[in-house]
Length: 253
Image 1 (cartoon, rainbow, N blue to C red):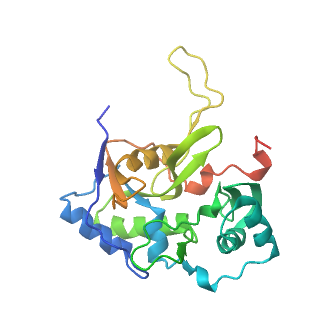
Image 2: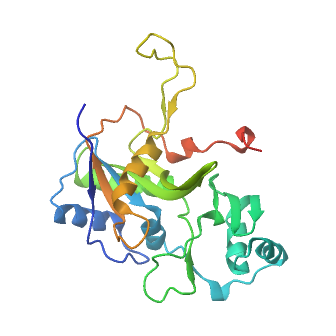
């Protein structure tokens, strides 16, 4: 088995609405003297994709409704952010002081519907950033762009940080992907003792996203992407939406 390498991409700078991420990453990989190969995986934080897609909202333009004000009183959150979170979501899962968990329109169950206020650049005091509209489609577009420049790769994962039931802290997960199977089903295979695996499905997209998170960070690191090299992906191309458990299979309610 080859060693897995994680290469942070520095110097990309502040991404603005309308920026072409394909051009930015071609330049950043060239500056880093990285020539992508088959089986390389480019992990891109959802924040810079949202910035490029102009998913900014000025809170000064948000008028909270009655439900948002009620939930804001319960959660002790800004009612304008609650209003936006409700608009991005299909269901409120939990509301408690300092906690608002919703099922996002993409099926993701997450805090505040993924709305972010950190690292938005100068003048962002009253700005928030929503998740990308369609991360799988955006990943596919970026993958196609990079594949035209470098034949055969890299695959692309769009990552975002998630909390988890029953565990403290956040990890990175794949919310968009193209060029690799985000889920690897090993049911039916034998283990080393010959026993047949009956439940084992590997969330490959999440594992790679979390590995890249080791170098991208969550604070002031200013590393919005990383190239993962050395892991040979199984064949296939399954989007990140494959990883979303349907609401009908919710095991915790």
